[in-house]
Length: 88
Image (cartoon, rainbow, N blue to C red; front, side, top):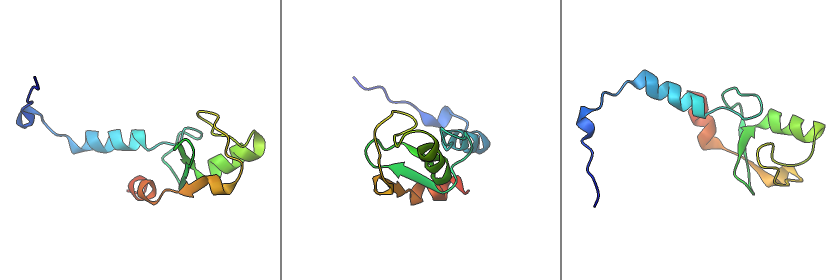
């Protein structure tokens, strides 16, 4: 059986929500809020464009999180949705 939760009892603190969103909008390489974010097509992990480019130049052409191979720029796309969220 499903339980119904009465959300009217919860106090919503928008500053806490904003902090939670910003905490989850951080690049796993630089640990800052995403700047010009890209998404790797194969694994869907996201990074700042400059961070993943530098990572690929210094190390291997793979995902910095899960090590999935991504040989060329064609394996990543600019993430406009994430970009609009991280700029707020």
